[in-house]
Figure 1 (cartoon, rainbow, N blue to C red):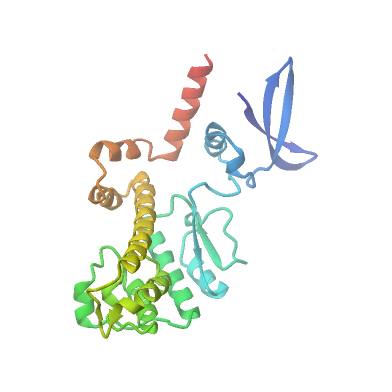
Figure 2 (cartoon, rainbow, N blue to C red):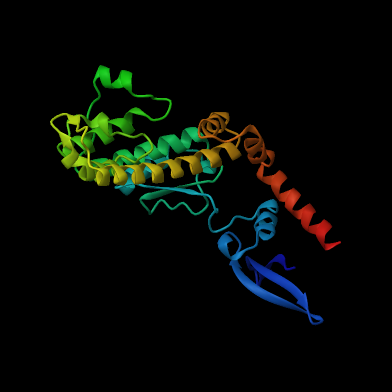
Length: 269
């Protein structure tokens, strides 16, 4: 089993190397400058070792990327966040914000909503104010006002007045454009046609199932970070308490790293 070694060379670095011992000699493999090592090139115990020693990676395996239509808007949002909410690879020169894997749920919600708003504005459909009736019908424990307004604008821009007939909080606002286009022929006037074709319904179900899978992944990651509301969401999706307890067992990254290292050491002995 290889070991990750970090060292400076002629005053530069530090650099990371994988060192393995075989055939009576050590074999060194250069991985890159510390802080720029791609985790996909590492074993789990090597990732844990670098993190436990406080060395950053080129990116985290579970980072969230949120694309804005405008870099200035993205930087304005960055200025509202604490530095530790951003991944080490986040770059102010880019319009995509990369959040740290342990970014808080409130930060994820804020950045996701602002990014959707930015893309909606750039897409030409912007946002449409919500009526009191619409606000009463929307479950804002699962979405936010900006998301709903952007989705409403996108759907109505496709000629569908009864936008809530196909609105789904699990889809990004721009994804409602494709959904509306696929269902346009099944929608007459301001209501969803009850005689919707099987093909159109199948397409809609496929889109919703994909969004549901993504929503479950986000909830799982947030539950791992210790957010109880995300764990409750998993329960609503059918997860058992035992399965959720397993996720929460190693919610702390340093505890997980220590467990991995200890298990590897025990296996070696």
